[in-house]
Length: 435
Ligand code: ATP
Image (cartoon, rainbow, N blue to C red):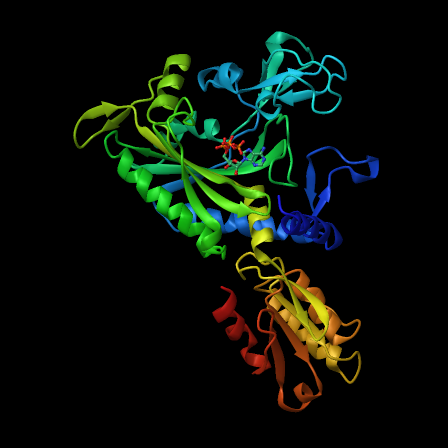
């Protein structure tokens, strides 16, 4: 990683902490490694991202429905899915200092920390285990789900039978997943508890390649519509050696993070692997009956699997900017209005002459539609800078002219240009620019 880029990560982490986007988990106890908490602005940002995803995947389509499955599932699910057997990383231990490393990350036979001898590689399962009920024995083991997808597969028939959907159709879900990653790193890029936004699209075998192409393009466009710079996004096609056991074809959407090009989302043609396995392990017929052709078949599944936290990091990294304005550094987050935690800042120029009262009125009228922030303390320039730093697209200021002609200034975050807008046209003005 270049110095400038590692610097950029440090700046993002520091801004996130300073302004209340993201904190280390359990910080007063020294922090819990690789776990993070979203603060007041972070939670808005993440919600906006999840909502944009939900809207484009569920609300704006008639062929995809939502689901919210439990995190704890029957342990057999993870046998059928292949996770009990195959969701592993090869690990080596240092015989001297007892540290543990991913086998593919240590070169040679000596510990990178103390130089000690390493054991042979052993497989380490990444699923978190816990116990259900009062007895802690083998029979009561359950897992925290390592992906949300299985909750969708085991509900395939429930959804099919309770709706009037016909193939092709999809089921979408947003929820937490857990993986006991050996080397979590890069802030919220790889953590042990994270949130996924997954959609499983059930199609007739033979049409799968076509749908795969469709979803690949659709998902790439979603990031562009979120305001991510297209030159920072690319596809990575999985070669034969990278393909997961279930996949016939797979593409990652990658983003160029400060630490390099990394996966943001996976789009997979999972064939009929998952439903066949669940049919085999549960003994329940998972076939779809096509009443037009009178055919019965196990649908193929095209999966789009994105990380909500990784998307948050992408949006943060892509939005961060510093520029020199009048001899000072202006930090500005160029968030797309769709994801910005706060849409409008409302300020009285000074704290007298009736300006706060007018500004409060404006704040109240805008708050019905958008997340707004009222601030009356300190110099106006500083108030603008504070909003720039958290990516607020617009600021409204009430000044002495307002009291005469009922207009306010609206300042644009990116251009820093100001224009006068009649107070009673503000809702309309922002509706054109924010929604
Ligand atoms: P990686 O190779 O980075 O471990 P993966 O190929 O195992 O990821 P998938 O199983 O395809 O990832 O998961 C789909 C998406 O879930 C990823 O693209 C990513 O956005 C997100 N994701 C997976 N693991 C993590 C994690 N440990 N922390 C945060 N997000 C994750």
